[in-house]
Image (tube, rainbow, N blue to C red; front, side, top):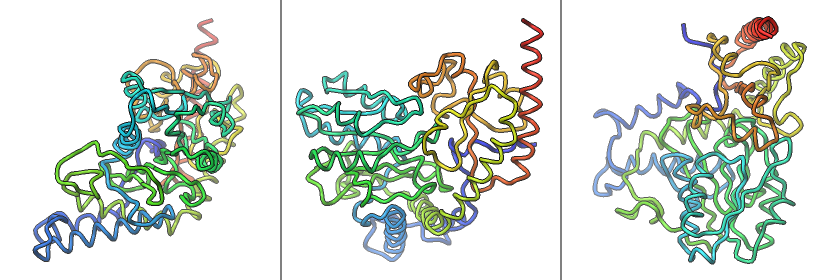
Length: 387
């Protein structure tokens, strides 16, 4: 039997309604044309689907459709944002600010640029994992060109004060990028309020297909983003490549559904998350990582005292859970996110991420509570016996 899914932060299943829309653009009987083929109807219909989807994604974040650039996902969007800004400057004339708890899709490009001579400041979070606007303000240098702070952390769900950071950057004349992969479709996102210059989106985090995402690029900005992929001048010269109509139609439908159902869905998921915590917190020696900060509704990252997280995850074979980011799960090192928040190696190793979503039910939560209670009790008895 499949395990009960509690790893929605890693990826979400494609909504059946999304898959149905995608199928219209795949086979001979559908509108399978190249959106760039403007000499016949199949191309026109594909282009229409692409632009309809662009409108839906733009509407979800309060943007103009002309500000949406299609990419293969948030990793590409993040790379385009950071490198596309840096390519405007000589290394000695460009300083970047990022957070220590960013996804590797921000950290790795930033470190790559640092090796090329670009200035880089990596800000440490507070104990709850929050990067404050004050910390950003203190790190700004005369040649600071870009601040990149994620909207919601992928491991803890902790929300950074992006509205305050965006306002600060606007006041200082600095471009602001936010990786919103874990925020879009889960909490309200409004680019007018947040004031980002750039914002990254990934479809598979909100019930769309893998392999498609977008980068919001503010039109009312003096930024000339430098393309990282050349060959055809697609997406107004910012991202070349034949557009995957079926995937784009998928992210568009996923965005439409998210915009329609977000508030009700968030409240339901939050209730299930709180029920899960209420059912296990009396086990004692547990703490919610980032529990003192605002978080996305579906994230619950728990440090289980006196227990190794990998051992607990193995004991919970009927639950699909994670010890951290899906992109770093192959490593045996403790979570760098939790370490940056001040957790010890032991506490970080003893932490599990439960993430709930659209298809999580009360029955799922009840079964998870039973499994967690049994596993934690058994492992603590083993530890006590061994000592």
